Length: 259
Image 1 (cartoon, rainbow, N blue to C red):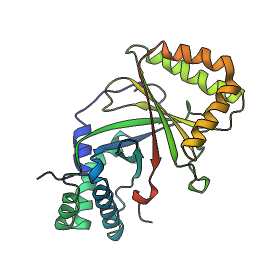
Image 2: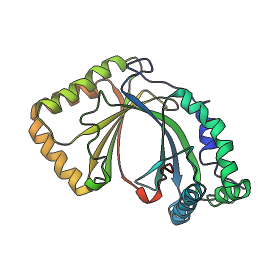
Image 3: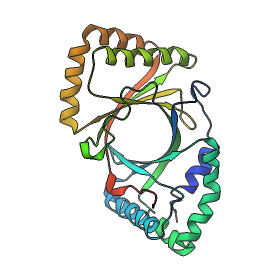
Image 4: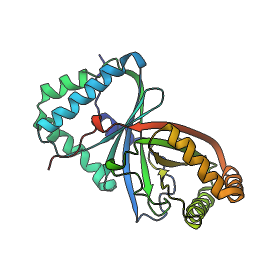
């Protein structure tokens, strides 16, 4: 029987999947996030969410402060647990914390909670993203829950190996272009770190809903005009693959450390 080792399996596997992008460039002004991503069967999505809520409640009931996570649900029933980590040393500390966490919860309770995920999915992947505030435009935009900007638009830029430095220059040009025209909408830039298949950049935009994303993206394109078209051409010239996805933050599934 499959058992979902929600964080522990993730932490163990990610250490054996190393593919670092821009690893030495500007380590300051960055944040690391561990991502555990499950591709859930549509017919099991309710069971999956119920299991995740049960796990969250178990953590809260036992005042577990060794971990916290937010949850994003992308299209096609892809769920991502986003876990902040201070640094690589902080990442290693999770191995020790896991035993303490299980001790607080109780081995039997923990095992029962993990079994609730059985059959919900056949595959998952684990990786680390590095948030680059210095390359992001108004990086705190949309993070306040009171703003109601829970819709996320994600652009995945897979870079031609060897073109990482050129992409860093392009990312700075995008930020400067937005600032030049005083665009009100911010975005966050993440670089692929451990576990990503290829050199990768992720743009994340925050909006109220899908309709708002379409409307506001159109307005931005109109304001930036030909300058955007020129920079897009420059960006695409160093990419080997481009993907975009949409999703929604799920605060009802998240867990925040007890105070």
